[in-house]
Image (cartoon, rainbow over all chains, first blue to last red):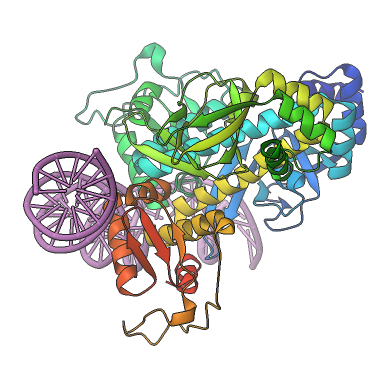
Amino acid sequence: MDERERLFQLLAEAEFFTGLERRGLERVLEEARQKRLERQEICFRQDEPATLLYLLTEGRVKLTQLTPDGRQVLMRFVEPGEVFGGIALFTQEEYPVTAEAVERCRLLAWDGAAMQRLMEKEPKIALNVIQHLAELVKNLQDRVRELSTERVERRIARALLRLAAQAGPAAEGEASAGRLPTGSGGTGRRPESGEAMGAVIHVSRQDLGELTGATLYTVSRTLSRWESEGLVESGRERITILDPRALAAIAEDET
Amino acid sequence: MDERERLFQLLAEAEFFTGLERRGLERVLEEARQKRLERQEICFRQDEPATLLYLLTEGRVKLTQLTPDGRQVLMRFVEPGEVFGGIALFTQEEYPVTAEAVERCRLLAWDGAAMQRLMEKEPKIALNVIQHLAELVKNLQDRVRELSTERVERRIARALLRLAAQAGPAAEGEASAGRLPTGSGGTGRRPESGEAMGAVIHVSRQDLGELTGATLYTVSRTLSRWESEGLVESGRERITILDPRALAAIAEDET
DNA sequence: CGTCAAGTTGAACAGTATCAACTGATGTGG
DNA sequence: CCACATCAGTTGATACTGTTCAACTTGACG
């Protein structure tokens, strides 16, 4: 009951189903099947025939693409409320990526026929789908531009800020993370009181590399440097942004 | 009359309007406004508010994105029958790219309200839009993967093959493409009589560079080498593929 | 023909990748 | 509960791909 109500809440806020009446949401939920994934479990694999479209309700999923020669590219992380696996479903083909649970997850899923029915009864959904895809296209275009014209350092800075913004809304409010003046080395710069946001991001160097088209070595070196300059503070599969402004400056146009 | 009939033909084959009855096509055409562009004329500029969605009926258009620091990235060429400018229209925002006519063009255009009406009366259109966007997403993902993991030479080879395939359907004419055993090492290679397919591509080195994330210098060097090996033959804003197989070998996995 | 845009090519340089060796954390089973 | 295996991360040395800059050639077009 309460659980069911929580799902409605989530659905109503999910990009695919915003703007639907209670009635529509009920239909959507009726057609859905529920699923759970353990950490590191695979939701679907690249090149499998696409059968289901997923909505993540809890946890985190990463979408990766494998190159013919075995390298991986990280397309994106999926956060609760987001949909994935949809592209393939609408083109009736295979999943272009592999979806793996980063943490324990809960999801809702619909097959192609169900989506078809839902879109017929609730045309708003089709519009939402279009909007979602258009959004994806824009993001991907930006990424292509970045990869084509920008250096690794800047790409990493952007990736961090994007990840912080994406995961941020969920977990804010930090006390401390204290000001540890790690360096004191040379560049006396240090986050001023109100400025430090301390957004914590949970990704490995490897992930960041696959996300930005760099090697984990370059990522590691870059983070080390930033750490010595007081911009971030990092640990195992964890990066804390101490000075978002400075990062933004790197991400934008200043050298 | 005849002109009108030609338009129907084109509409019926265009990705956005396939599967529509004659009746639907008529509606689509009624709502359309016609437009012409001279060579190098701008159809719309990046960051302008998006008002129209275009279908190219004749000519060629290129979509480019400008980076903050003035570099350009070429997103794609638009061929007759293809739609562009749609992404922005559906997200109610600004065009993310600039559209420039490469040759003299003719186009049809619809505004947001018109598309809305059309999609209501002909729901098939909404599905086509979704499919088109999904296709775009897949292509962009592939491009991100390429840019992240592959070297310039391979990216250029792929770009050439894609361009040939895209523009090709218009101008074909093959004999064989024969069996050429790539190997034999020595540079003695040369296209045999019947073998050359001669797919001609009209792009500058600059364009190819912006398309692949390389400088025009690197593109020029690469093409020069290929030319000396008999894979292509090139001139001013023109590249002829002589040995598609060898190019494909470079594009795929062989070094 | 002269002019301008597109293309070519060399030389030096810079940014990253690659490889290898090492350090610490994490967690596991005897 | 400790020893060990494993995994994420760090850092140096080195190599190489591709960029940058500059000078030059070629071809098209009025």
